[in-house]
Length: 221
Image (cartoon, rainbow, N blue to C red; front, side, top):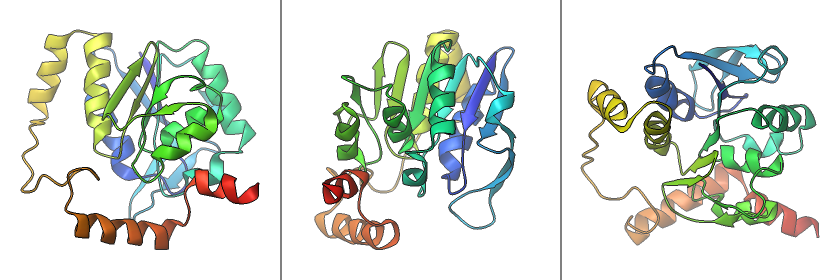
């Protein structure tokens, strides 16, 4: 079963490797990392990179996973990448995203009129593409599944394992990777994080990544 995990320069490592760790354990799994030009693709954190094959060499995957990253906005008008997504979606069993990868699904026209999620810093930007933003961790709509920020890609991949194999098999994978999160703090969303912490993290994002796509579109008009 061919699964294509789409990454690009500046992707977030766990967006790609979290789903890989789950989906590579499915029966007859054939998981490949793809990128616009192929070759080694560097993540948005230093010293991490993955080998990929070019988009053109991967046709009709059963599953597509689109990773997010700090550079996603650069690819929202990349017609080669968006065209590949549209073509792949015609035949996938599931087209999915992690974090800001959902913006690429939106830019490809795949989220029009659908509920969808993303990382909190770009959640409102989904409306630019005609989607209905929701802060749920994983949002399932028929063949399209979107997930929130970074770590939620593991949850999304386990949802996929449910549907591609069985709930019992998905539970087996969860146990095999000992996915039993017990963080020391309950601060994993903007709704739960202390107000002071949320303000600091938002300021850091604003400084390093600049305005959201929704803000950039508003500024153009």
